[in-house]
Structure formats: C-alpha cells, structure tokens
Length: 474
Image (cartoon, rainbow, N blue to C red; front, side):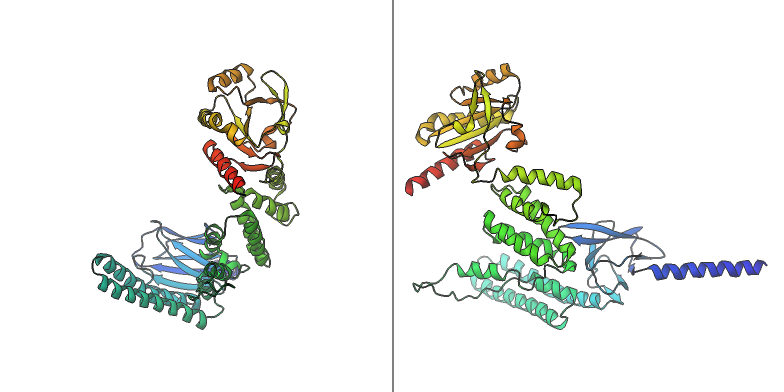
C-alpha cells in the first residue's frame, strides 16, 4: 500500500510537470559567468519607454525566463542588478539558451536554439571590431590637430571604416531578408542623397533638392505596421526625429504628415494605437505656439469619431472637453468675446475694444510673476501704444475689489481696460480661454482674431513689432 502511494505521488508530479511544460510558450535559459545577482530582468522596448516583462532568479548558477504567453517580437534587454544589460532578439524562436560573461557580453556570447540571435551576435561582433577602429582613428585625428596631411590620411581611413560598416549592414539585410533584425537595419538606414543637384528652369542648381530628397526618402524601408519594430529603439526615435528635426514646424505640415503615418500604421492595432497616442500627446504638450491646431485635428479625426477605441469613457470625456476648448482658440480664429465689469462696475465688451492690436492679459494680484510681466508690458505700452495702435484688456482673476484696485494703483495701469474676471456676463472665462495659470497673454488683431498666445510680455511686444513691420513692407 505504501509503494502504491509512492507510485501515485510520482505519477501526479510527472503529470504536473508535463502540464507545466505544455503551458510554457517561451523559455529562455541564461548562464552568466561569475554572476552573483540573485535575479535578472527581461525588459522590452515600447516606443520610447521600457517595460519589465519577466524576472528570473538565480538557480544553480543560471536563470530561466518562462511564461504561458508568447512574447511579442522585438529587441529585449537582459538587465543585471547593476543596471547594465545586453540585448536579445525575440521573434519566432522563443525556446533557446545563451551563455556569456556580463563584463563582455557581446564577444563572449554563445547561443543555442535561436538562429536570429546567432546572426544578431555575429553581426554585433563584426561591427564591434570596426567600432574600435573608428574610436582609435578619431582619437588619433584629434591629437594631430596641427598636422593637416596626416589628418587627411586618417580621415580617409575613417571613411573606409564607415564604408565597411555600411557594407556589413547591407550584406546582412540581403542575406537575412525578412528577419526581424534585417528589418530593423533597413528601417534605421539614412537616405543617401545624390551629390549632383538638378537644375531649375532658369538653369541654376536647385538648392532645395537635398532637403526634398532627404524628406521624401527618410522612411524608405520603414514598415509602420510591423509591431515588432515598435518594440525596438528605432520606431519611436525615428518618428520623433522626423517630426522635430526634419519637418518644418507648421501645423498644416505636421497634420498632413501625422495623418499619413497613422494610416500606414493602421493595419496593426498596436502600431495604430501608438501613433495616434504619440502624435496627440506631442502636439498637446508642445511648447511651440500653434501646435494645438495639430492636437485638435488629431482629436477630431480619431478621438471624437471613436477611432481611438481603447480610450475609456472618462478619458474620452476629458479629451472631448480639451479638444473643444482648444478648437476655438486656434490661431486665426476669432477670439471668444468677454463682457466684464470695469472698476466703475460698468460692463465692458472685449469685442467692442477698438484697436489695431489688443493684448489680453489674465493676471492675479498675489502672483509675483504677474507683477513682473505687468510691469514689463506697461513700460513698453507707455512708449509704443500709440505707434502700434495697441490697447490692453486686463483681466484680474481675484474677487476682492479693494485688492484689485490697489494693484491697479501700484502698477499704474489706469489707462488699461481693467476688468474683473469673476464679475462678468461671461461664463467661466478660465475654460473659455484655457487659463491654467497666470499670467496668460493673448494677442488679437483689429478684427479680434487670435494672432499669438501664451507668450510672455517681451515676446508679445516683439511679435507686434515684427507683424507691424511686415504690414508696412506689404
């Protein structure tokens, strides 16, 4: 009877082990020479962020990552407790082992069971050789700053190294066509701009050709709908560079290009979701004046239509309010009217203010920065208001009339149109003009269309001067 119990126990353990093994969708065995880390992390890229995917604990000198769900394809980091790491490819091969030395993970790497990682580390080892050559040559170049002939010689050697690296990349792409790392290399390639400029109709070289060619070929070989690329350092960084450094920072240009990329990412839900989120976030948080127009365009096309399917009701409600608020404040739109009481308790309308330029400044009596901006604006306005046709519509946010009038006297701004925000026929001017903090400044033209916003006093007055001078030239 005792023997039978032992047999049953062994059978149950065996069945449990088989069931566990069958449930494993990935298993990565790692042996690290001389490692004393009690645990290591498996971390994935996602856009510009990193996400911890799994943790493996030291067991008889090695670590094992395993799980019941297939890992999403991409480049993953194996991270040590001292924050150092090495990278591995995760794609179709999800059962493999590797052995390396944490002090030299690339050159000491041994892979079993993953052709992708064997090829990846073969490439890294080869590139490493040329990387060291490049460092040595650049060091020599800097040390020979007075020997031009020798510098020219070293420059040619550096060029040869770069050409060798380029050839290694192209060979890898060709030989391993379709593999994840070949797609990564293809996506990361820089356009090779022809050196010979075409001629314009008048026979002169077309100097804009280089920029146009570079822009048009910047994303050659880039698959926006390949979710695996999203889990590499390439996807987010290349898009970010394109929008911040390549494109002219104009709302109409950015809207057009954002839409184009989002549509290319659309075949894959994850890349589609990421691109919509990325462009919306970047435009909403941009410090460049006028970029909220991009945010509004994206919001109307994707959030208000239900295309952003992953957004919950609470977030959608917040987004809808934000989109509608910024939509009425886009540069070029007619500013919302405000009707408020002045210091004599008389109603004053913003739109009835007659001036070539109207500056609206929202300020608070207890705000130190407001004092600085009000004083700066007042000094300029006193000297230039008549020349440029400027009037200031000054909106105080405090309900205390005594304090408000004291500050008007202190700042000497009696000639401004001073109104009290809380005492008005205008519902919640904070929401109407998106006043999150004070001071906030808007600049309107003679028809009360928004010319500029959220600039400081100096930037606003400089803007008026530039705009005025352009008008004279025209």
